[in-house]
Image (cartoon, rainbow, N blue to C red; front, side):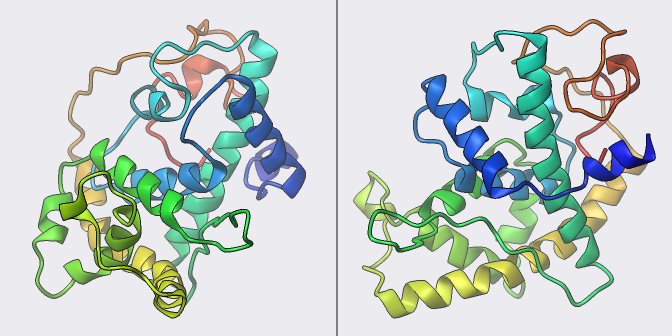
Length: 239
């Protein structure tokens, strides 16, 4: 069991990232990538309130998605939860160590990592957990840590009023370099909110967006526990 639990904390290999990418393409999910999922998960992990898998998985698979089999669910959910754990573990270290999480940024056809999808995913994560973010956004001293992500998220916005000024290659590189530190600052700022949420949990009515799993079946997250002892009730933390 200990070996299995350690496996759930192992970062995904390139081959496993490719498997997730191939799966998302095979089910016809539009406008989603590993980079966008990475940003999405990062925001949810930073979130000042608990966001359950039943609330955020539709942001990856869509509203009406269902896996073709329990085996497929176990494989894909296991990969996603391992990546969640990688981000969560790295961000947790930023509270006590001089360490940073390096986002997964994919290169385009020209070999450029523009950061747009990661930033878009981050703000979609914020949209899933708006409570508490407003205080950070309105903080004159600390709210600036969101600006680099906001600029990249709105660079290609359909609303011209939301788009920033054109970003040069040099400025883009500077923005991308600030994101790991900004992410650490965001996580630290919102930590008291997360702690308060743990001490004073509020009732959440989840909406199931993935196949119903029997309480005595193995949890598809890959923890090795029965579903009733794992994700049926647990908040989305490290397994």
